[in-house]
Length: 248
Image (cartoon, rainbow, N blue to C red; front, side, top):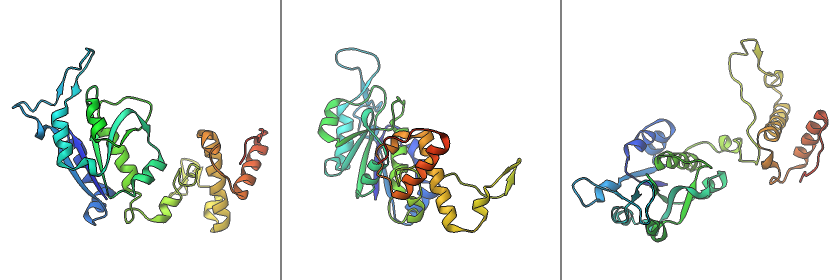
């Protein structure tokens, strides 16, 4: 998979591709990337890429000409092209999975008040938001998308690790523990020291359900639960003296 990112500040992105698991993915050929500096396509000696908005108002808008030339240089119209925007579709694990199947993703990073709408109309397939808040940097949002997507590419992370993560099964991930066995008086749960894999698996599933009920109950309304999951959830609800309406 290849990530092609268009930015006014590509140096913000470079360190991510040079570090940790991403660096290994690049080195083994699982991931390719290209960082395109939009300023390289500006006309004037100052490399101006923004101007005042028509109709007045605060801030500046990224200009059409350098953006168009930059997008044309990477053949954005022939590829899956995203624009990072707080008014876009909210990014989630499902979208990450869909994007991980693309051969190449082109990501346009906005700045200031955003980009001229005609650029979006002409070149962008999907506007993506990473949440209900505003950032000053489209690069920061792009890194969130890239990080969520590339780790789903075959050869980057083991299939077993991905299957147990939050959202992969519609539940949040269970808690983890490692050495030492006792830390500041807090002990690792005995079940994890038992060596009984079936009981450990059931304990982890219970903890996943408990965590999801506490932190993200909205996820449960969309999940089709197995008989085992239903039974565990009923046990949790009964233990807490709560109502058990709405189970799938």
